[in-house]
Length: 320
Image 1: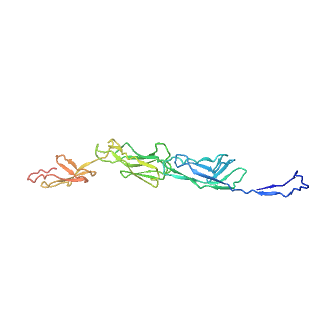
Image 2 (image 1 turned 180 degrees about the vertical axis):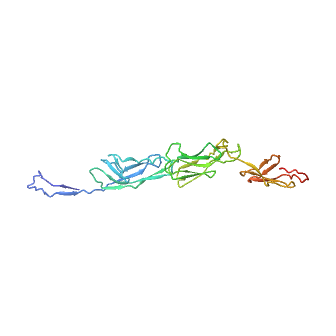
Image 3 (image 1 turned 90 degrees about the horizontal axis):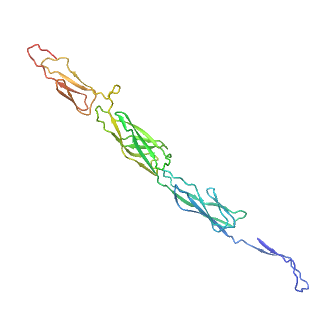
């Protein structure tokens, strides 16, 4: 800007003639170029359940409010006479997945009403690091408590978090049990089931309980969890005998004997075959009506039996 001054009149001094020079005297006033710096700094790193915050600063207090625009489009105002203001972003939110990250912001503009800065300098970006809180998810196995032999045992895997956090952002998970059964928990689900057939045998009271447990987990997102804990506590299913009632007679074991010849001479030993309708895991000892015993070996279904010959003689004594 320029300041101009002229002489309007002059009196006194007893001059014979005093004539003022009307030419104005001018002085140019140049700006000294004062720099105003606006910056943003992080107020420290946070966990995912905490609110990230920043401080926006101006290098000197101003006589009017300063509106600062941030790189995310938000604006904050530093009041007249002050040099800083706090700015907070949204909480990322606590969850059960590995999703640590960061928020970086910078100042993109700063203005005051009715004036323009001689020189405005904008500081660099500021970053708040966001870390995971490590929330545990427990995978627990349950099983049908009791089934009849040969029946279906249902195994169920359930995912839980003690704080009730959602477990709904994962792909299929495959849980392998110690008996080789695989239980699939569908994408974004917390439960999954599979069935297995209980053992069946022909004996009474010999069914051992079926014991199973979680062995391992796989799947693209199996390692996405902050802490997926496999509860490997064994589960047990009691296996009871089939009732042996009409319509559910249980497993029939039938032992029979057949003659190998329809007739023999009295000097020839007659032979028989003892049969069982299903191979057993153990030897089967069969007692005949003459108190003789025949053993059908484990895994086999028959055994021969030879009776003594009647004996050759001179009498008519044919028989059976």
